[in-house]
Image 1 (cartoon, rainbow, N blue to C red):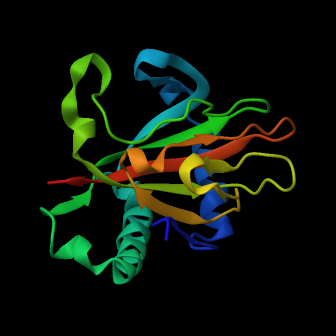
Image 2 (image 1 turned 180 degrees about the horizontal axis):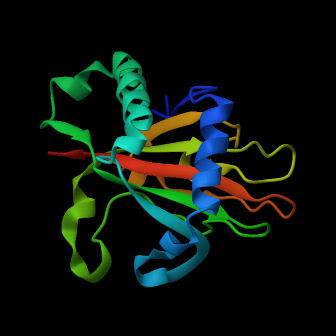
Length: 185
């Protein structure tokens, strides 16, 4: 058991394409991806406020799917402190030849010692486009498990060190994802 669960085709193709268009049409919101001591990552991202009405279908989809995830891991609702969807997430683009190559988990101090990251319980990722037979996966070392980049797929996994992961490079394709967390309240 690896606690990694993917829901294929969870978000519809039109929603994925609209989200990619949102990214491409809002260049003024783009920032360079950044990760603690490793610095600039090479990707471009937009910080999404899930409280914005525009993202209600994303929030609804995450609420519905995490309920399905919890059916497999029922102690998540009874044996740990209360937790819920974190208000912010990242909409990311990796150009051809780029990926999040640093193995990492979703725990640890944030930028400048901000400890908000320590509150993460579950990470999630939505693939907005499909990459076939040429990299672009997310790979979990300890389980030798890969998440294939399939348009509309949604994956959950525990945020801790047991789920170190990294992106695998696609030399021919751009990759678009949205990623975020469920945090302790």
